[in-house]
Length: 202
Ligand code: MN
Image: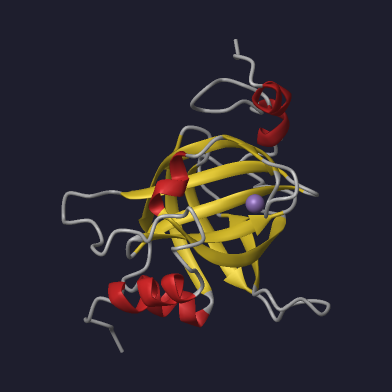
């Protein structure tokens, strides 16, 4: 059954209900999703916190749907990468690179590893998310082509939704280790230590 009503308001309600904007510095977020001309943002942030992980984010309904991927994406369709669903982030978060003070939530260093746009490969993204299988195309600087996020039954005692990030077979599939081969920031050309120390990249 196709969903016709936009779910923008419902999504932002959920985002806002998790935050006290008198306390947090995070934006409340735009009330409007983008118009017909707007493209949907796609971002991966390499995040050296207590554990290194890659934050995978897809703009949808005015927010960034977010997954923490401990091992990062793989271009190899035979490799399934665990992706823990985390709370939606503001779209403005997609431009963030820098240091988060130690002792704060997510304290450490954030490197903008890839950025671009994405296109759903399904007619109804909200239905795909609730059914636990979202197919999409990435138009990033490093990641391109067709991918899928599939929800799993979960593992261990984690309360976070557990998904798998998998590359589909297309001309962008490869056994090359893209994390190893292209480690630098797409906006500053820096590596994590350079961002952490505030020096410039080359
Ligand atoms: Mn993170």
